[in-house]
Length: 115
Image (cartoon, rainbow, N blue to C red):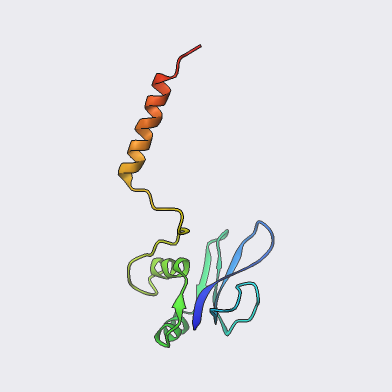
């Protein structure tokens, strides 16, 4: 199965990503890519993606990584809802849970004796 995903290139502490089409069994660091579809420089916010080629490969059945899927929706290359790209063990916290945690922290501060 073909997969469209990000491949990190660049130096330490200066991440630059390539948008590549590769076999899903290949590692992202292997360098065995079928086609390079674009680049994404996160530090300078430069984004160059060949939208026509991405749509072509999606129509042929290529799957995308969740991060790239969200990125393409942000760039308005494809339409749809964003996916949860966080690791599986990190759930998305809802606003109510965040408010409850803030209240608990406030109570702890109030209860703590002042020496």
